[in-house]
Image (tube, rainbow, N blue to C red):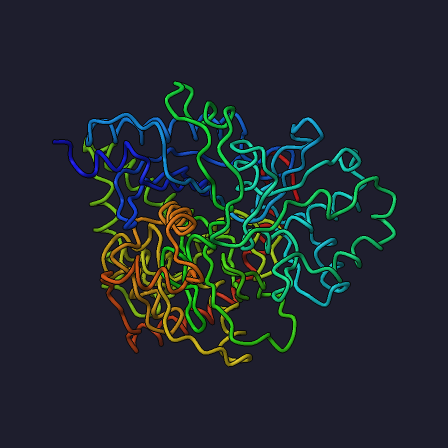
Length: 538
């Protein structure tokens, strides 16, 4: 008699979530109880080409195929069944950015990622026009900046989307987008659950826009909310994902979402007064709002949950890249000594050193600015480590300062919400690789935000798991069952988590560090202005 899981996989009683993150493409296959059956990943990296951060589309397709192939092999190895059909699929990717396609579906310019801080004039102009914060990374800011710069490709635009929408388009042929990801393309009307019609009219009426042959509503993807079907896997899409031909077309796909939305789902943070923190190359905190903010804040974006509720989002462009680079240096030291390092052990040992440090990090200072930082006003960045002769340059202080620095810019943005807008946050759930080492990142994060931080036992599953849950919700929800109710009753009913409250000494130490951090921004600015990159001075 066949194993029940084997039968479930063979019958397609599963859901697949695929997420294209900033450093990894990951796939997670779950059963109808949202338990993980198999997972796989593929590492990739962005490139700075002609002044823009981008990813290679051929590498993306290769990564998708490699990730799916690994997943398929794991299923065959563990359950002795070939993956031929799946109950539902969902695609997710890093939010925002700019993908412009012509009528043939070909890219007009290389994909411009969220990491680019090149749309300042467009973003500020649209913010003033709409009286609504338009961040530099939003798709509409990229489009308007290309218009202002009179880029030749703009005339030929037939479709503009995000990375998740592009992958969905390749798999289904449908021009669809989930409302959470759509809210990073153009402002959303909460009541209508669509693009804000008044702002669309305002944009269309701009003198610089009028000369183009397309209409904005014609080139934007159609907005869908969680639970709706947004297309089916086409024959071409099935072969793109699985060139072996085993995967059958016709599988329903849920709306594609951004990594912010999948992070909310993966941490059960779609209800009012809940918040979540997602840590990776960037770090962002999201809080589901009970009421509109009183004014526009440069540090705060307004987006939505995957089911359309308004969310205040604070995003810092830089978080773990500099920490990872330093850990790579320690790995090289191990190898030079003739040792073969265990990276999990290396992270654990070094992170735990931070708990032995001086509360403020001993006078050390770090800026992990691999790219520009919107919250502190940098269009470009230079990773920087600074100390004075009086600083206590020890390994514990070194590690603590880099962990503090990972949350410093985020804290500046969050202060606007908690201090000026009096936003009530009942709980913050965090996820991301920085929390894999037990307690350390969580304790210092709690100190940095001065609020308790929970890490669920499922947090390591990440956004691909959250995307798989959204695909499963589309299939298995009851009539009128909300996403919040589905998560609480059917996904997280037995979830265990550990909450860590801020330690007073850490909170005081972080406050001292923040004084040093804000004063030292002039040092970072000087580095950007005078540190030569690629033989050219900025």
